[in-house]
Image (cartoon, rainbow, N blue to C red; front, side, top):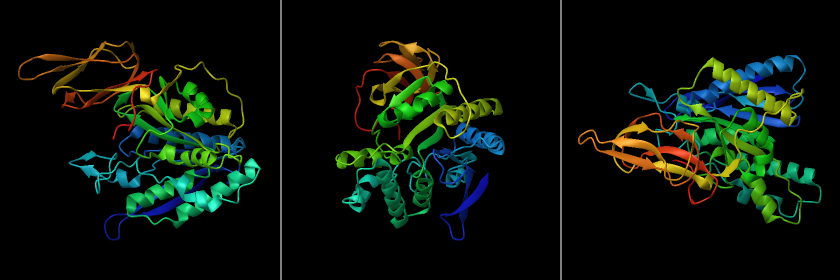
Length: 370
């Protein structure tokens, strides 16, 4: 294991943050897998799973089993980890400008197209190497507007060379679920099965430029722009949601880390054999995922458990007016698996109350929560 530290500027004078990077195997070896936890710094399950994955990788590396290269960043957002309001950590949004730490990553496809025009050939591997070098140069040429943009660029520099990128998150309360793109689906099916995902959600563009799409979209975009030259999807990525915020335990972390390590075996980065379990779900479009919204304010209770399969018209939750006692049912408009909900039980009008993975798309525009 090689440990390196990237120094990030803070917002205040003479303030800095450390980004720790752990590398296993031979730098430059293929496949190269990149795993990070805690981009939303108030989400602990992914950080614990990434840290425990690093421990497992140290063991298999000592056994000579890391045949590719694996990069692990257990705590990908030291800026968010330093943010507290009245004793509570707030790591989803940058307190300086209010932006989501997992949004606003640059779309580099348009930016590098002029750099590679006229230089692409007929050999896919040569084209991949050319594009990766152009992506690296484009990131080096960009100027960060502030500390959080500096963090975004550093994370992209670490992830862009990888063949597979895994971004570990969690929801308020949730079943394990995974977001990925159609171009990445085949390389993510094993991970979904091994982690027991109850929802495998697909979208080419979910809106807001999240991290996982930023590392994949250039390959999709350039393949379309230059159809006469072979440009394979050289990077696959996913956001893996490891249950809810309170699901931080070494038992769950060890299970998640083991499942991810087995996925690395399946991807060929670690030697060994792995038998895949049957998948717990089939892929569904993110545009078919219903986000339930509170129509009234009050106290929130749920009529069904997470993981339940529900039908259109089912009552998912009930909101009780604390003054009048009136109860308002919240019904689903779609059928599917109830896979996520917030951790709090006080509802304001417009509060997102849960997510249901439906098979039929019916939404467009921004598909992710803010």
